[in-house]
Image (tube, rainbow, N blue to C red; front, side):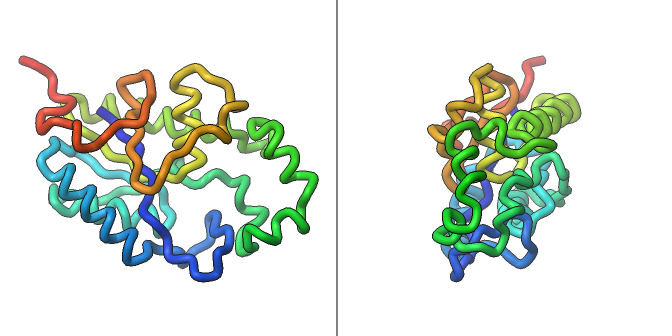
Length: 201
């Protein structure tokens, strides 16, 4: 089984859009919650832990990998959606006054809001990573720590649903999305048995 996991809560005292900016690691509560999830998954047959290259994702992945003694590798296909980069460092309150037309496009048709790196592109990247992880680690559990937008996009694409439903999808911090085998869905990590993903024989 391949799980996509959203990183933990981020330290963001300025309440800015951090997008792909460096220097945004986990808040203490985020580290605590990640450690709770790590304990939940400690008996699962985790074979690999991969993260988006961003600090918050790597930090989360390292906490999840620790009980298994695994290193963390990074993969850019799990990276945050580039759309947010245009507002990096800006407070959420200022976005409307700064870029009202683009915000309206994003609200009405998120799938078309970022030509060159659409939600479909983000979903394809995550699902391609998941396909490779499943092929490389059959019979085990692989964790990929990513971000809300790419995981929400992958969740919709994996179900064959359109991105017009993007705003209705919520992937909370440390939520787990089963990416493979499909169909994609949010799963309770406590429901994953110690033998999850192992093949008989």
